[in-house]
Image 1 (cartoon, rainbow, N blue to C red):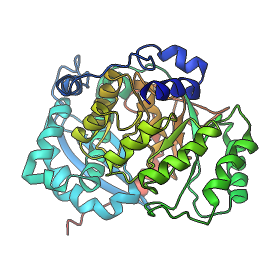
Image 2: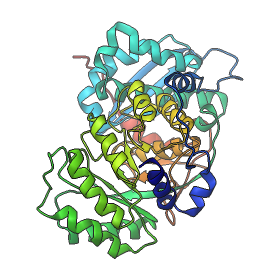
Image 3: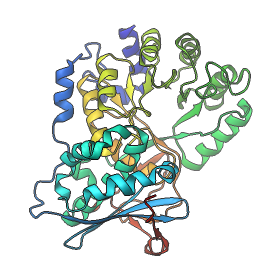
Length: 419
């Protein structure tokens, strides 16, 4: 089914995107690089810190909290400062790992060495035993802040540090976070979020989430797939996310219904850790299969790409440990003629993180996930940070190109407990 998959992918992405990416990404001669080649591509340096001549020695890395949101502040010995907004929905549980095992590691280190330091952090004090969301959400929070620091002390954008923006305007898809409402209720909710943003693409949830084939409501999935297409017409790009709901046989049955109604990708049809089942679904269907938001290991993505277990890889910038590690995933996918799209974590400044990533990689899908802004008040001199007519302008200034409201930062309380 490989040729059928590529043909459907070309159709689902639309003529403009397919033309821009063919034949390297979408051609029928899609490359099958060796494991060694994928590792070589992944291991090439990501960060561009040439031109930052003096060491940027980290003096402090602090965790602060304002309401539900966690922030990281990093300061250098020469007075530089960088900030990040963490994935607070998970850091509220894992912050002791940040305080005990991540932040202390960076103190006294040269921020210019961030990329090799990520490997040393993984090894440090057996941190690798915490492999998974618990470690990588904390690592991402630190990495984002160090990137912001490097950008601000050098006057360069994070995009420049990551190799340069390849685009500044990002078309978004709006994602519904609801499961268990009726099909009619879901369509009404989707109409609302389209009206808010002007988005030309949508994603909604199927199945029951890790439910062993059970639907959230009887018959909801079978009714919702055609109903959404009917409601929004043939011009709307539609995606759907099963969140690990199905075994292979049921996933294929649902996928064929999505194919019938012209959906553009099918996210995480099988359990996220059942890669062989996911590959069987991808091989059986022509609709592109996306996955990877739960993948913690670079080698896990390497296996997915080498064995074409998915058509579109979806690293989460927080769950996978930051921009550097996720850029490596995008590089491997590009080498194999595959696409990459960031999964957006639903807290912090996830919408901005995803847009910056999509602006830097060579192989994004046409629309990037957007779940709405966080409660963190930010402004930018180069972007409204709002979706207008379905598009978001990526900030282009030192660091992440944004300013967090100083009053909001003053109200934040330092988190000190390491218990």
